[in-house]
Image 1 (cartoon, rainbow, N blue to C red):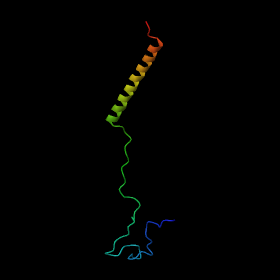
Image 2: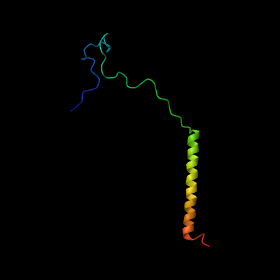
Image 3: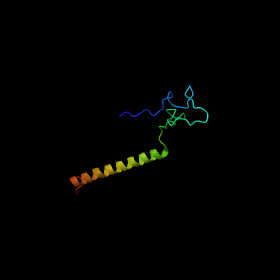
Image 4: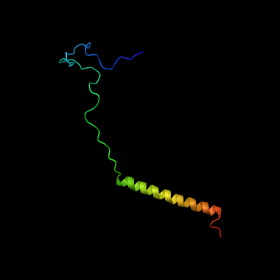
Length: 83
């Protein structure tokens, strides 16, 4: 079943003037008359803050430390450091 359009047809809507305006004292239609707000949201910046850079450096350092530890443990298991 087809749904009726959300905007009322101005030709058959009672209490509308010829140009589509509302007569004084009448309630406007339920549907919005604009498609978007006039106040646009600001574009987010692409720069990284000090906290972001510090966090990335700390995570990178942890990854490097865990990687070196993993390589040393594998070499120890393989017997490279055996006396």
